Length: 193
Image 1 (cartoon, helix red, strand yellow):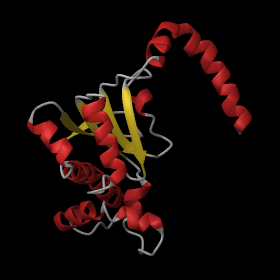
Image 2: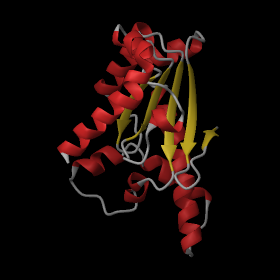
Image 3: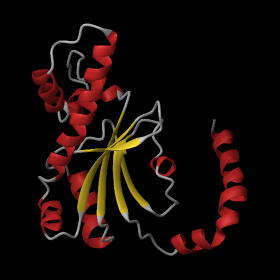
């Protein structure tokens, strides 16, 4: 596997890096991303590719379930670096279809770290389940999961606003926060409001 990765890098250097040398020379001197893109760690999601954004354009944070735990030092550090240091004006929180983290919200909780992490998404499930009847068909189950995935984007944006640095930057109109949803079946990104 490692050899395949190294071979892929050789191909990248020939077909991308060398062909766009001036761009890579510029970003080698420092980064100036325009967007903080927070998304799931799912291997099927490649933020730069799905947005056709070149290297250097996105400051990317990925984790299981695109979750923003309130009071998390890792997220606080990202915001501290993104807002006052890099002066990023746009923050995107992106969920996606077929999210295994959302499906895991229906599993029996235990002491594993994944369940401790997913508790920060559980209110999204509760909100959706309070609004819709119990699904009876496979199509209804899929729709329920889609609704929870969308609600999780909204919930995690709410969690972002618990960080004083971000809230202040938004209030001062230095930063805008947006929710997006990526559909794996169609490749489409849509706004979540």
